[in-house]
Length: 499
Image (cartoon, rainbow, N blue to C red; front, top):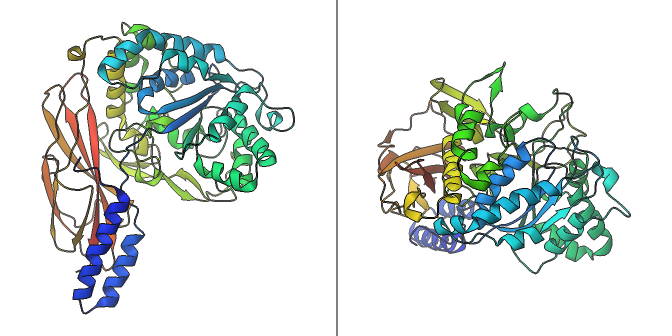
């Protein structure tokens, strides 16, 4: 496909072209500096292979884990699911509830054939049943050490030691002590070189710290890729309302929702579009008691929608946006962080609800709320619809150029979504989003950038004046007019060079 650019090839081409220009330019030092700078810029990655995923869930501590598992299974064709382990947490300290995982997977087994009609690659029912495991029924670090092995920790070790070069995305929806025990044991049983190889493949996303094993992992294995809003909740006075993940279904200040549309994550909408008259899997999505699906952000960033890049949390996506730094210690954290982690950052987002801008870490998720909710509703429709023509399917967003381009200050830059199509022949609308928080330009809405036709298939702008190489990210959002309307994306990285 024209827009699926191999990052390594693109870097070689870019450097070759720049070197050629450099040799023709009398100011060779300037051009050499540009080559060096551009060589350090991370290219947009094409997602050409399925991510490997391993879930740790304290399911049944409250309804949200079961809710998230229902959504997770509707996307399970987009990744290789290698384990689903029932764990403990601060809310469920001495028991696990693997029986609930089995109930939801049993419902999935009844609808898998329908899901396959609409998008192939869904894992067989018997396979999913075989990878449901049980973690140690102890809280946090009391379940780590000698004689604390469990089905879950042993299976996780098995998966981590596979001869598979792909990362393993470990999602902790509850406590993380199954991962802690696996690491504790491998540190004592594997040669350091082999352990280092394993650690390089681990990608962790934890929904806050629901036991004390997460801080222990981060402190004792400082090279592990770790996404977390660090801290714990205690009697409603802890960290959860500060955490990025809570933007999935909330953004509450002073007792009210201040920016996102709450209606499409509330029980009446979920009853109508997910639970009632939508087949066996939708019926397993329980009534919300607090906030909907607090664990879902751990995998939303893995959905192959053209926007997400799980290797670059700072790029932003359906699962939120995170930056790499050492956060300051807060009273709701177990202990100070000792090394950089991927954690909370902010986006400034316009709200149609309040007709004003809102700036928060929650907004890095809720800015995409309509798209991810409609997408879930469509997949639940698939699970209950055995005919392709009777359901809606996402459009295919394409570009009329590469995903990365290099321009000079003052150039007119044309952004094209030419070639985008819809498999159901629905009409398409286009939106170009300048993701100003991503990249190095650090543009604000108050700057002098002038854009044209951001709501058209082809948009343009004049490259700003820069003194050094700067990067800008643009998101093409292509939305159909089906029911529900569905959105897919392309990301364009623009490198702006001084003239």
